[in-house]
Amino acid sequence: MGEALRLLNSQIVECRRCPRLVAHREEIGRLQRRAYRGQLYWSRPVPGFGDPDAALLIVGLAPGAHGANRTGRMFTGDQSGEFLYRALFEAGFSNQPHSICIDDGLVLTNAYITAPVRCAPPVNKPAQQEILNCRPYLVAELGELKRVRVVVALGAIGLDAYLAVLQDRGLIKSRSAFRFAHGALFRPDPLGAHVLASYHPSQQNTHTGRLTAAMLRRIFEQARDLCSDPKSADPKGAGPKIV
Image (cartoon, rainbow, N blue to C red):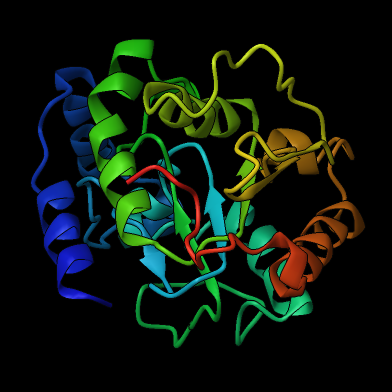
């Protein structure tokens, strides 16, 4: 990982911009879940991670209360992560299909994972102001990930957060033209990254069958194909033009 991303991640970890989220993430660490009783919870903002030269950027929602908020790594230690990393492994973006803890040997290849909110929110619902407070971190991250060709947005909030950055930079006039639907494919900026939408691998979606393993695998197979297609590249070799 480059020095700029390491510095950014160290800033993210120390963030206390949202009092409600700070109180909630720390309370979770104190109370803990019975299955993890006695473990030392991370209970801080969770930075992005992965390959800094990635062609694929994955934008989620926020850390899981007893997943990333416990382990300190995005989508690690809960069922959402198990679902996601299995799909990434099958599509060739991960070296293993599971995510247990931060030092379990997981390595992402050509993929980077981030989120619009870095602290676990109550009932997985961040307030709009909390998303805005976190947005500068997403903007800075995207500025350092210069080879991104495809953005997979996991859920409507992830899609809206990415489009909001493009709108702030004047690359799109409105977000309303890009309506969330599973499998929807956009290219908001003709010279920038493709955007591929997917249902989030939350238990609410996976346990009800709204999102199946095969559906998520197809999303990342499509993302892989777009990443390797020369026609999807920016003529100047840049990723999403937001720097």
